[in-house]
Image (cartoon, rainbow, N blue to C red):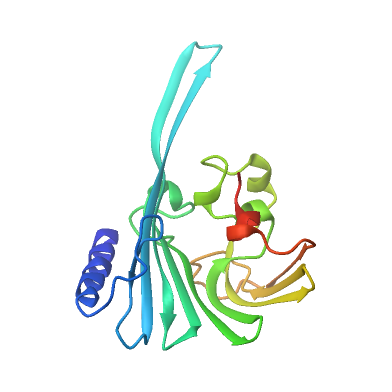
Length: 223
């Protein structure tokens, strides 16, 4: 079933590409399509990360190892009708990526499905499922980590993705940049289809950059 979804998505991109421009496509940035009237855009990226694990048992003197496709992602982003109305879709294809779901149902294939509306200067409203504004190690993209996996500390004290609303604001005071993010989500994690189990999740994050913004979003790189 997952293969069918991927095939349909790629076929759709191929049909759309016939009437669109490839301007902006380059290595590292993916394929970008845009019609002549600039009414919408779509950018497609894919990546995968391999992981080898080897464990030696001192008592039994046995060596156990395995080779994994740690991550395999398909990502689509762009805007529709107006550059102020952006969207992002990210799919997880490898089984290791889909924790807490069976490989047969593909229930955790969707990582991100979010619409971002820039409704006013320096203000954005996000609606859908995406990462919550938690600790920095978690919100850094897996493609920008120092190592293939995040730390054990992060795995115990972190929040992942959630479905709901996020309000984001950025303000400059001279060279200083202030960012505030608040989120109200269902609190049941990602891809949960049952009714709300009781209560909601409230998340807030603040950032102060005293010397201004980092070049190329360098504050969101693991190395």
